[in-house]
Image (cartoon, rainbow, N blue to C red; front, top):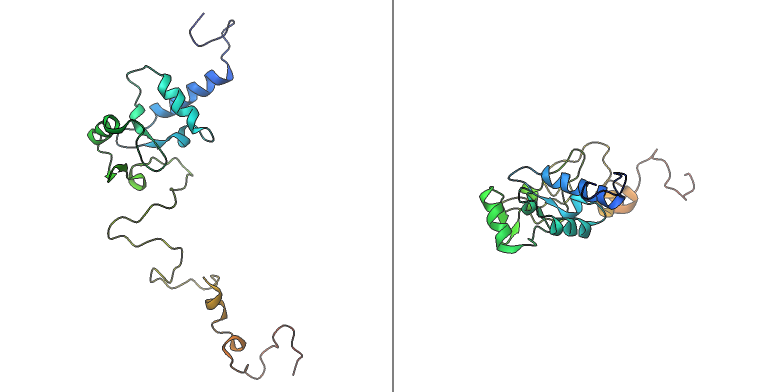
Amino acid sequence: MAPGTRSGGAESASERRARAILERVRAVPEGFVRTYGDISPGAPRLAGSVLAGCDDPSLPWHRIVRADGSLAKGERQRRRLHREGVPFRGPRVDMRVARMLLFGEEPMRGDPPAPGEEPATGDPLASGEEPAPGDPPASGEEAMRGDPLASGEEPATGDPPASGEEPA
């Protein structure tokens, strides 16, 4: 009987999960990283357990890091990643640059901007861009701009009455 299989050759569900995790680790190219959660969505600790139990020297275990870019294996892992050209910001991997995204994945949120980079606020006015016609206002204050009632101005003759008002 082959190791890791039950009598009859059928693979258990946990063996299939472990095999899938190891395949995902092997798919991470040199110079990139993935997180434990990337290779085992919903069960990052399972990924860590599978990696800890694997003794295959060809497995690029060092390319799997914590979601915040910190390293589970410290300096040993850092040296290997550095040799592969993985960028760091202080003691952590620069996840905005080094994290390998698969088709359809979103970049991680909450990373601080790189030096000289504008913070992403989602507000087109903060970036100096003009909002596109028809874009909703970014805040309640902006929503009231151009509303004569909100500014205390009298509506022009022929303007429709504001909600709750009687027509003139």
